[in-house]
Amino acid sequence: MTQELNDGLPAREGALALIEAALSRRGGLDEAASANAFRFLEPRERAFARALAMAALRHLGPIDRALAGKLAKEPPPRVRNLLRLGATQAFFLEVPAFAAVATSVELAAANKTSRPFKGLVNAVLRGLLRDGGLSDASEHLAPPWLYARWVSAFGRDTADAIAAQIGFEPATDLSLKPDFDAAALAAELEGEILPGGTLRTERRGDVSAWPAFEDGVWWIQDAAAAIPARLLNLQPGETALDLCAAPGGKTLQMVAAGAQVVAVDRSPARLGRVTENLARMKLTAEVIAADAGVWEDTRTFDAVLLDAPCSATGTFRRHPDVLWAARPGDVASLAGVQGKLLDSAAGRLKPGGRLVYCVCSLEPEEGEAQVEAFLARRPDIKLDPIAPEEGGAPAASLTPRGTLRILPHHRDGGLDGFFAARFVKV
Ligand SMILES: C[S@@+](CC[C@H](N)C(=O)[O-])C[C@H]1O[C@@H](n2cnc3c(N)ncnc32)[C@H](O)[C@@H]1O
Image (cartoon, rainbow, N blue to C red; front, top):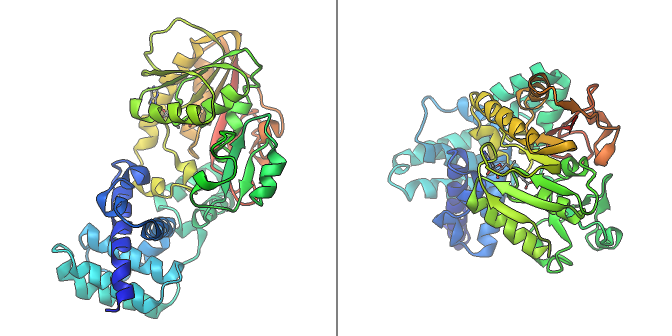
């Protein structure tokens, strides 16, 4: 083995740790990043490990499909993941085929669980390479059960258009403080300003080195995720409640719009991110750790945002692991939580107050069905239809009911899948 290949082994072991953790439902890729095999890598190796793991997760569907034809029985998870990473390197990264195979075999040999499968790793990867490319059909990019759900919710053509987005690495989207010169920053970052004001750039990497980061004038936020808070049309001095606030992208928008904001989240650890983000942006909000369903507070607000916990299937462009970690039962159990949180949100509105409900989910049970059930339960709440392209929403996302069903292919270059609805308390 050459020195070059030895150099690549720790990075590949790091990528293995990332996908093992991401697919085990423990805490997704973010938590996986604290795994020792990843954390102690050199920056260059860490970047390769992350790129390799992300590419593997983005192409897991076609890779597993091809592996199914080569494996007579299920190998241990480490071996399957080594095969996935080997295939990713050979088919989706510019790693020479011999290096992809040799490093995978080396890594198999380096661990006692995978050592007996060294020969299998070699034979299967060589077999895949002999067969040529993997399937590029959109329907093979998503887990079959989720693809079937999208076909029944949106039709086959739309399901294909959604699934096709899984394979693309998204651009970086920034939200800016309203009084900041967006055009100048866009020029510096060679980006463009999207409808609604999001700055989109093809740049990636360590954003803390980007222009004006230290000045606290912009933050990372997907173009779709920035739409719901805009629908509140907050006016300076209004009171606003962000009921599921962490890590705080929408809290920042609400405070930057001039509102007096209370930010609630159940997770004290995640609330730390809200506090950090507020501090970097030099903005202030009252930050409270509480379960929004039972939080005892008698205040009422001009505006409430409920960005409820959900299956997060709409976020697959940045978190492809959500597709593979999700289970069919998740949607129904989360739908119950969302209904409870909606009732709690309604009780915290002033008369005439606005409520925006949103989820980064593609599943109708977490969106449209929640709206209808909520309206049926609450005679004091009316739907307030969203206007065409309001808040920068793509025209195609507006539903006949005046809610938003934002799909990942609704904007060139993609955006996260989101559902949003606006209500008013009568
Ligand atoms: C979709 S994320 C919110 C993202 C956030 N609004 C933003 O824009 O950065 C959902 C959040 O809901 C929180 N959460 C889940 N159940 C909750 C509950 N019962 N009460 C309060 N927060 C809850 C989670 O901790 C998580 O931070």
